[in-house]
Length: 180
Length: 180
DNA sequence: TGTGATTCGTTGTTTATTCAACATTTTATT
DNA sequence: AATAAAATGTTGAATAAACAACGAATCACA
Image 1: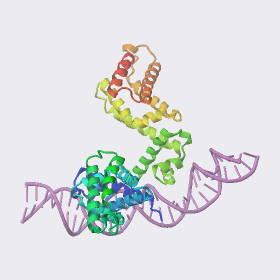
Image 2 (image 1 turned 90 degrees about the vertical axis):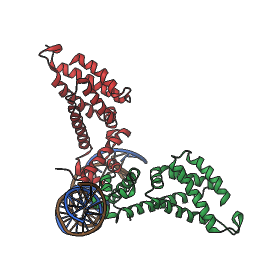
Image 3 (image 1 turned 180 degrees about the vertical axis):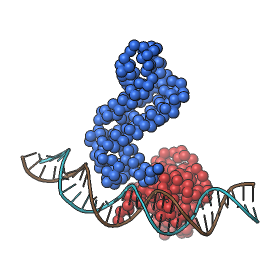
Image 4 (image 1 turned 30 degrees about the vertical axis):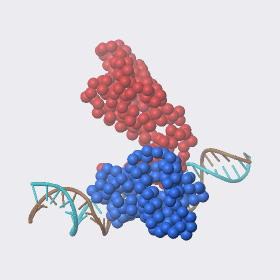
């Protein structure tokens, strides 16, 4: 079933408003009033869709994780390098969101959520029954590689993407290849 | 009385949509369907506010004429040069609208409307009872100067504003000074 | 500590927008 | 010229959003 156009527009405006505000001030100083003002929406409309600003932030994060997941799965038939390039391009095209969410100290929520997602993803790829990780601990390898990956992405975004997506993908890809 | 937020948002989206579409194709090939799609608004909403696309275009034009008028009157206490600079800056900041409306062959409406407005404005300044235009025909002087002014503005916008507002204002101002 | 201001979360009512449907008209294609 | 496809202009019912109002909670600061 498709959502009403009004619902979609209101929610888009509200989500965009929060992201924007988070680039300007700390999350806990942001009020619902601020958000509805910026979104050009009645204050009650925010409560119509979200419990509070934390719920709103949660929904935004989940949606981005979900989109990112789909986007990267759509690259499943590609080889490893191409799929990494694909993901970096996703980060690039959603730069405002990711840089805000990773940079903002007020939102360690997202970094954790993002890390958890990547842990699950890498877990699918790690094989400790054979190959270079035979005999290793799955948890250790997975934590190791996920933290490394997230850290680099974080650095890349915080520093204004000093390399183009393909270049960073190649560098990261080469390192990931040594682990998983 | 202030307008409902929904009304304002819908109308803004619809007006923006038409301007955008006019940069892409001729006015008469644009349908109400196109406009509502681009504005992300139900087709019925367009009819709720406007009779048809001509009425919509009329309202857009009138609104811009009105805004421009206010903006330039707000410069009434300035000297001649400064007020001309002010007007050029208005054109610059509404470049999308004016260049579209003046460039688009499908909209000779606006050029005429714009010209008429300027004729009325210059008529206030022309004095045939004394000074350099003593004995002249008011209609002739007014038509002369308004057409000249509109022509230059049109040229300036169509050619991507090759001079900054102040520079073009100085050049035009010097010429206007010789007439009125 | 107290007091005024702001935000909160909720409510009831009003209103604008959506959506689907329809017959009609215009436009495009064969 | 005939036919299909798309746009028109209009309905009625459903619904999301706006708005104003409220007491309660929180914040600012004297």
